[in-house]
Image (tube, rainbow, N blue to C red; front, top):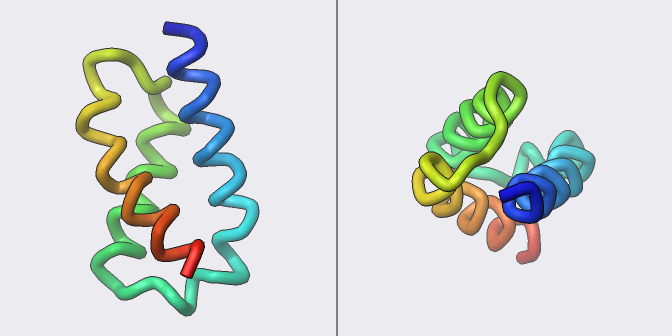
Amino acid sequence: MRKLRGGFVLVVGMLVAASPVLSAELDPDLRARVDALIADVGESPTTVSNVAERTPVLWEWANAVSM
């Protein structure tokens, strides 16, 4: 479980670092979901019970940033 949380936090952290530069490139719906994800991760760690809920937003965000 620590590896799961650590990996998720690492990926979110890397995307957050790039986010201010790339925020103009995200569509408003995705931007709102990313902001909610960042807030959620800050409030509670990623666990087995919430990883399935958080992963789709992370996936879309990573794909949007990579383009």
